[in-house]
Image (cartoon, rainbow, N blue to C red):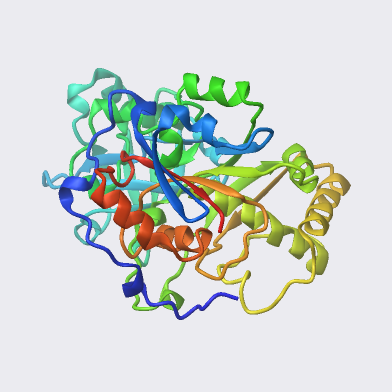
Length: 403
């Protein structure tokens, strides 16, 4: 069982500013790759990752797509207000809100929100773009809810909101890059296989994959499957409490096809998760199955559900319950949310191998890595820091075999 009083100071390390990769490399798959297996560390180039993986395994990718969710508006006084769209509110489904052609509401983070009491704001800088000017995009503050706000957007010309964001928004690159979004980010802060719009942050482990790498995986007999978890801005939030028990995880919606559930249920092959978002999705499936067994239907996975008691059900039993529920209700995919937190002591039931970048000090992602490698994260990170590896979203990658 996990120790939910884990001190975040035990997961601190010094990350020099110059080790943070501010820009991507010219070629995605030319990044360095650290392999950690059986307590040993070796160095490779990412384009050769297929050679390091077990044949006849299954690699699971997160095919979410980053949306240009950062918008800049101007008050009549000339003051700028930045609005960062987090998740849809009206309509509440991503596919529906992106199809809206006149009006929609989002849960947002608003910069300078205290200076915005009421009234509509006009898009900033629209005069430099005739296409943006023709939309007449406006924002109205509907309500505040703690650190977030509900914002209503209205526009004309009948364009779907997905296109409105493409014209008016910018890619919300991570704040730790300490720079504004640039044209290169529109392409490179997006995986090659990104499909379903909804994330405000990229599943960055996938940024290294190229057509060449995907072809090499196929040639090695590795099946490629997808899940979709929309990454929220909470992925950037630091843990402010001394202990992890004081940290509240954000909800992230995900969907998994019933076909993948059936293949996971017949666990004859090793499962490789590309990124921590894929891990959170895969591991949440077991608890969705437990909810089917104990409550009759799946729902959002609570943060601490994996801890506090032992679960008597096998992974296969949990998948059977989940598959049976979907079949009874004529559903071809599971669509719920997860707040699951993965910390040392977590029992991994679905994931055998993890591809992931190097994460921030005192972050929940570093806790996940520590849990996966049996606590040996510091050895891995010390090696990466002393051997020229680049860190965070645009940085190098690691291939970790479960302890």
